[in-house]
Length: 282
Image 1 (spheres, rainbow, N blue to C red):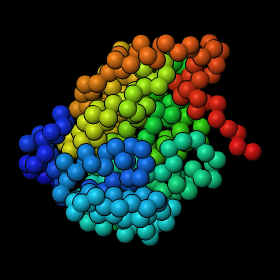
Image 2 (image 1 turned 90 degrees about the vertical axis):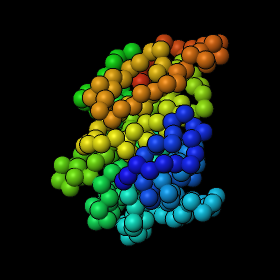
Image 3 (image 1 turned 135 degrees about the vertical axis):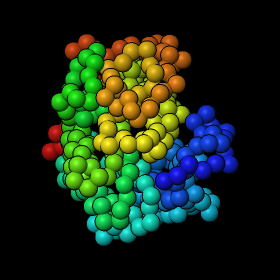
Image 4 (image 1 turned 30 degrees about the horizontal axis):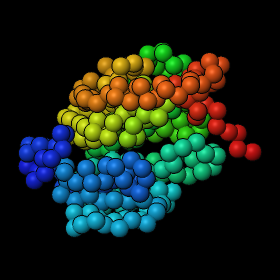
């Protein structure tokens, strides 16, 4: 990847000297965050290959469309042809039965890393999740060295992805930044999200730093904006250079106008919120 001028400097993150690669793969492009990042990431690549299991249409000539089921190893191998780097947002993003999580998130992530190894791709941005550590209590401050405490099968799958990416770095030199994304929405919806909220501009900045910062090795970075209250310490991932500028304070009055959850509600006790209560699925 190289640094070349980009013609669009309308966003606070992008500038005339923004780094740029030739072909960037964005998986999960039909999902919520994929849809948000799809247009923004075109500032940093000549071509963005957008992929999902759902149908997609190219907006312009800068996009390539590739329908792909992550559970299909051959399809994923073809997906990574001529790719310089990957932003991996694909897979299931909510708690579901294990068999569904296994196919999309566990087998799918393995297929992606195997294809990257065979295709010579050396940088992946992996959308992990705060649900890897969802059973820590709200108010506890943890860093990337804290033992994982997933709050469901979804969190387990993301912990697997973090460990798999560590293995592929140690053995094959594929650099990965694992993004433990908090609550990336247009605005926080509840008291928990006043702490976990990640604004879209900050998410873009985090992804771009993860793509282009030199010598990231294998890093884990918690994805939250510069909110007043914090549960996550990013000191271990400081070398990535994530410096959030947004915060949840403009939404506090609106959020706190709604009565809080009961004090003994698990969603009010644990960092994973309602995820700690989902299931079983029998």
